[in-house]
Length: 479
Image 1 (cartoon, one colour):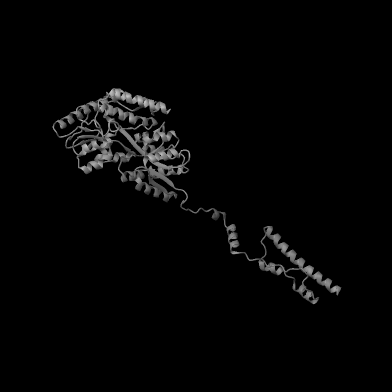
Image 2: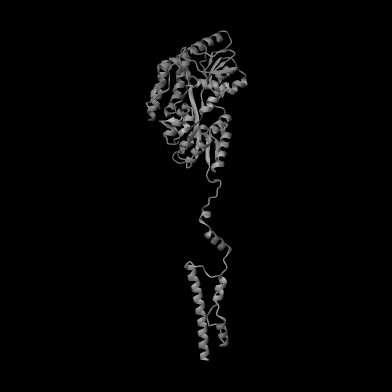
């Protein structure tokens, strides 16, 4: 009995040892990088030989206490099969990019004139189709645009870009709120004075879109040919008033912005420029001889009843559109109301101070795109503007949607309607309105000087000197 038990134990130990060695060999082979045997071969190798089984049965051998049959290899789950397949896929397939639309980032553009929202939205859709970045165009009040960009200078809030008139530029640059723009070769496509408008301290801070200036309007039934000097304007107006054909000679919407060509024709100016060509508050020209002469002409018109001493923007336009004034100084914003009124008009260059002299020139307003210097998407915003807007096609689309004189030179020169040609002639030498912060101190002082002259309370020289003193005092307080 003892001999049989010993023999059975030896066979059991032998079978277990064989199984252990086979499993160990299979595992070691897989870890060494060899190809493991097929699952069926492992199962078969793991079983005792038939001779061993028969011998065991002959001896009446059973399973030793505590011995377990080795578990069959587990079938991999579908998730494991998928993971294994991904591991075995070539690296090129793993890294292949999948083009998807950018749903997290978008660009925001604010405009203060909703006439361009449609075309800018279409240009934004073109950009999105190419780059996957949506462009949201919103109408926002001009004052709010500047305030929000300034407030966002330290927080990174506000729009990515915005359309502003260039004369709002100074405070934004001084506070680091807008970023410089590099037009590279495209700068040659723009009107030089449009580039000048958005240039501050020798650096460009905006992408120009359109230029704007006032023109010299006349009633063509009353004045068939455009006068060339201010004395001629006085004479023609006097004849029309004396004959009862007109109530006054010239309608003055104000004695500042709209009448500026009178002052410039005599050599007047607001701010001079420094050696680098930048406007400087150190040179105020409102008390210069030319400015005083221009204001004296205005005074003479009022004293002779050829212009009203009650200067009012709306009243001046009504006088012209009702045929009671043959001349008015105004801009493209008045076109629709004059056409609706049916008044016959033409636009021409401003007269000169004397025969053969240089015509007076108006302020040039430049509208353009500025870029929030603190935007996290600054480069994307500038890419949109440069690649989609600053092109012949983009600028033409903007002009077609709202035909203001384009800042793009070829489009500007191709204009052929009478109104645009007239404004272009009037603004051929237009000078960008100074965008330095000191310009903010000019308007009230200038308006006050005009009122004092129109009402006869001060001479032009005294009123303008008073204005300069007021401006200089405010500049000093601000420093």
